[in-house]
Image (cartoon, rainbow, N blue to C red; front, side):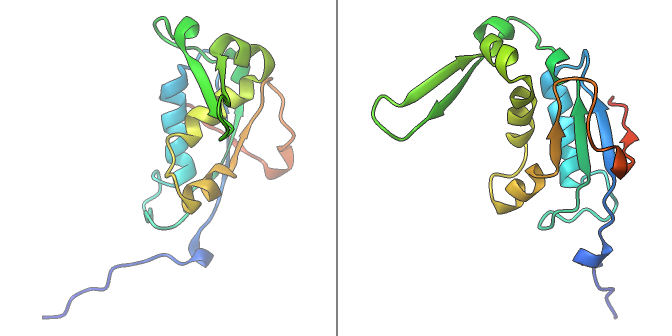
Length: 146
C-alpha cells in the first residue's frame, strides 16, 4: 500500500497580498482576531503552522475603534522597565488620545504566536489613526470584516 506524501509549501510558493481594513465602528477584540488570522495565513488552504504564510494588513481609522461594556473606563496598558518601581500604567483614554494606533497593534500582536514567527508576522501589520495610508503602490484590496 502506497501512501501519499503530505504537501508542504516552500518559501517560494507563498503569494502575499495586501488588504485594507477599516476599523471605524469595529469592536477592538473582534477586529484584532480577524486581522491576526489574516497575518497568520489561516484563511489560505496552504496554511502551515510553522511558516509565515500570512498577508499584509493595513488598518485605517484606528482612532474610531470601539470597546464594549465599561472597558473604556477600566482598561489599562502596563509596561515594566525591569527596575524596582518601574511599572508604567496608561489608561485606555490616555492611550487613545496620544497613540490610537498602538491600541490596535497591542490587541493584534497579543493574538499572534509569542515567538520569532509571531514577531515576523507582526511586521506585516500597518496601523494608521486616520483614513489615509501611504501604501497605495501595493494596490491593497478592501477587506470587509464579519
